[in-house]
Length: 586
Picture (cartoon, rainbow, N blue to C red):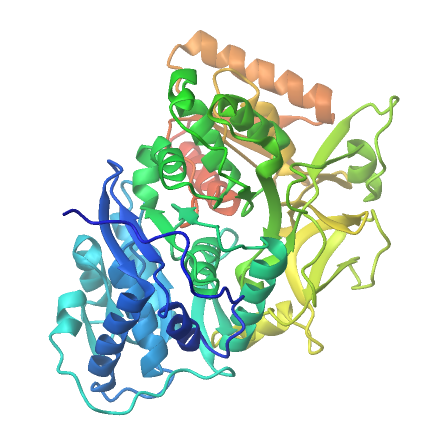
């Protein structure tokens, strides 16, 4: 008989992560029949573990780890490949009193050296005592360690499974101790290790389960999100265990190659809760034909969460239209706002409402930093998705440049305070002080406003383009580029660079698959004209080959890296006597 998935419904009474530690959370889930299920890129069930079996395996491994004699709280770096081994090691650390540190998996081609360098920096940054990587990525870990990093033990799962079990009494991590270190995606700077305690993550899990998602006994989760990202780790590893729900996993790489597998899994196993950044929905909308959609039944999908990057209504509307024949309901969309520094969730929209777009006067917002509702006479309308009110126990305040609170609809820095906010960045006190005030207010680094009690995100402070005193959102420029038939969503990156004669100039780097020189020139002229007519600014436009734009480990566009790469190309072109696309002084 083949492998069977774990059930959706079982007799264990649902509890909403009301535990003192993650070890205790798994202890309770292990009393039921639900668990984790891993699917291949072909949609075949590869492995299924009940939470009871996961706990048993984690305890065996914990007794092996205990025999290493490591200090309590020592860090265990785990390359977070989607599969049973990562979960087994993560919870073994919880039982053995070690702090797991999920590390990213390289998902970009041609980045061998960069990935090894990233792993080395993360190993050094967290002060890892041990490190584990599965067979497919073990060579990268071995190269990163080399003879430069002194680890007690490292290797593949089999290295640790060969250790002897000890009878040393296990002392699981307690409520006031670190639960894990979550590295940020590093979209604006080198990744920072977010320190989250057991109490902080369990508080967030409880709020998400009870209020954000209103989880029931009939819910089943489906995810392709990477474990090293907070939405994948907290939202779809820890939350299902905290609510004792079964979850079906598809590897992130397999999703990127075959996004329809995600929809097939939801349809086949009657999944009810699944999240994605907007680019995941866009990928599906492009790849799914009307014939494909008719083969699915997505009427079971009650929460189609969306977050992690700028949300555009148009993207989700295309998905809803493409999957309407499958019974997908637009009201299932659940925009949310969160970040690793707050464990995960900060705000969730009301369940069943779908998208709520706040349409404002875009020019007034750019010039006066006030989200004036648009009317019939508004020249340029901007639409921002409402991300719901803060979770219970959390406060969100918008502040100006001097840190003063701002009234509703005034745009400024988003700050949050609550029981889920991080303790700080691991061994980076200066960064911690810059982001976290003594009275617990976290500067999220995001810009937005409050409308009707709901959080509205307009962008990242670090990505803001300021031209002659006006705030220009890079997303607006990127959206204009993506409206051209030659440009796909996610193929444009906007930022500013210094002009040779002073001031700043906007640069738009666009991945273009068109080879014909005349068509490329026409595309550039069209985008120049559209940007000038829409935003009233001039710009430099550079067309680059596909796969040129850099992304973070979680798949988000990295504008800071795109800017760095552009300046490097410009410098090389100037040294060779050529030009990139246009001079910066003009």
